[in-house]
Length: 157
Image (cartoon, rainbow, N blue to C red):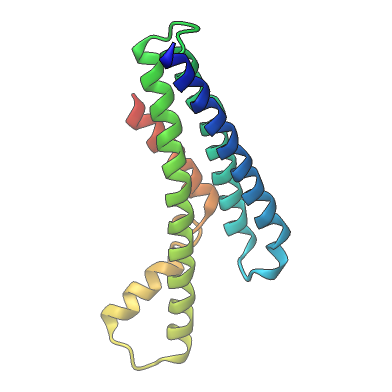
């Protein structure tokens, strides 16, 4: 009986967390015009918030209903798979966004220094040039999203 009570407390907590995530997503969308970010950063943040909402609503509640409340049997392999896919995907979405912010900062720095600073040494010039040369792969959200999805699949195999 205590396990069922703990399960329902967990479900209520998940619903409250979901409401907070939805509130955060709406708040970000409402302030989108006030923040000086490019659209690709908002897309990645939006993707990460939606994934975290799915994680809280679907995966956590399945774990609670199946494991704690005992409403249905869920084999260990299925629980492991769901937990890993959602957790690794959740982390990948936020790491992807952090990488894109890092890449944009360094490519902007590279562009500024290569154009205006003629006194930089050859090693620094090659580092800056790498950021500009690879903007279409390592700086592209679509490429990095495919990379994150493939890493999630490979880790779970």
